[in-house]
Image (cartoon, rainbow, N blue to C red; front, side):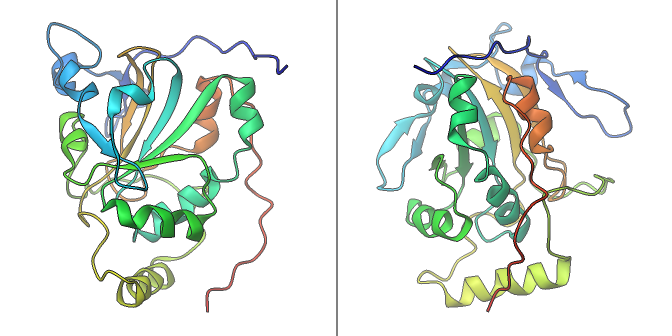
Length: 235
């Protein structure tokens, strides 16, 4: 039997504000909630699709458990690909010890889920919101804010090589599309159990992902070393 690690108290619902030195409270109205409810029932009841196209209510993903939910820009984004490659390196045993689940949400057709998982090695839970309804209700940004996001520890490619590789995947893939709205931004949340948002970060631009270990620390998951990685050459 696996022992559960005691998780630290979660921070209040927060967002990063450009130019600020720390988190600021997110007003409930910005989440589309009613009378201060942390997560509006309308959001929890919206559907996401699994890899077979089966609809699942978004709220069911975290109603009985605590979850780290990462909304990505689109599956052709090389930055999202490399970020998810590092998410894939989180051992399932680390998550199980902290009684936490990891979920990625994309905004493409469900038909892109399986190829994206094969490409990134990602084996945790993943769904799509092809109409971007949950993105919209949670206030995820569309368009890029010009803001310094610092150097991400998870991005390995430069903009030229990454963009060329994304274009190559687009034209050689079985379905020629952007695998989602190319100007939609993502974000990271800590949710559940129940319809509660404990933490939210909305990406301001494509480089504004939260460092993975900073999120894992909030839910009591032990530190993951992402620095030891083999060289990958795309051909």
